[in-house]
Image (cartoon, rainbow, N blue to C red; front, side, top):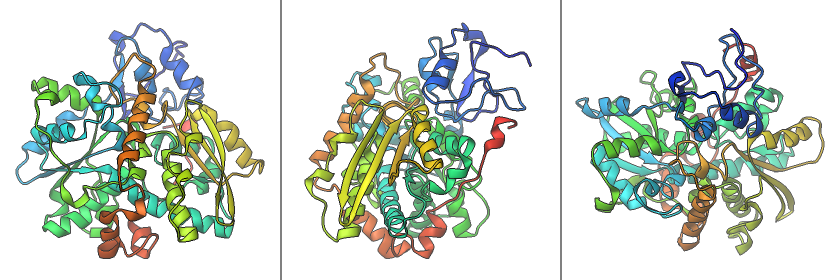
Length: 449
């Protein structure tokens, strides 16, 4: 296939994004963002003749004509809603609530959580849960794993993994470092697993009749839910093979769907998340902002190491909540003087990964997100020409965290109940089986699909 210099060559089978050649003006912005921001070698193509893709979707954000956009899975969800006997469960990522309103006249950063939940019920949800609960579960497991690694002084730094584009990047370009990635599943996966195990059992519903839809700011989640290992609930239930999450819809997809039905959230009554997984801590909420995963993990790690509640410096840890794409800090927890790094943009991570690979500059925890300011700047968020929108959304999450009485994952009553009734304790035998995963080297993506 003749190489096209200006635009990316995108596979027709890409689960995250689609390309419409009729709209393409060959401006090359997609190619530029892929190379400069996320460090993809756009000159290397696999056997199919398409560019290596980590599914972040940022090419769709910069595309001026809509030639590249996220793959639309609304019809898949509509079909499930119309299927007799299906129980439709939506859950919403932390970063969604501070961007959703932009499409309906609200400002970036405005928290429209209750309006959003009301809209999802109008669209056909039987239950709506908060993925922030899953973020708190991730924190409990990841903080435990971090403490274990610190005690053993092994496989440091710990790489957070809440960004699927990030850990796929490691699998492709740094496969010898995959043992550094936390084995804990992402909040979307954990929430879906809990729905198809604990929730299904409590309500006596056949898990195969539950259709789980995750509402996210992220196109990479569309890829992630299709990974072969994302069937933990079916493995636990021993009742066949099915995905933990059946569909991912971005904010843009839900907005388009709502507007096709003439629904405006300003005219929809407020609604609360359903009670079984209704509570998320402030630590879970800030997962949607760069630095949030690391900070949330350290809040709980502090408690696990010292037995005490963290001091105020662990709340809104300002050194990692800034515009800068690379932020380093020192954090003292008991006997440990941790060196932490927070990065946005995969290309910015290369130096640190090279240092880890070559044994230079010791770090203890490394958080990387592909999108600007983290999930708040995900490709599935409303398209906003105001470049400050991701930062304003991030500030919306941080401000929400400040107002909550519940700011620690280990204090979340729903999380405590989940461990008491189902998982036992973090990294128990059941937790390791259900809430953890593994990674595989994918350097062959550079030569074949």
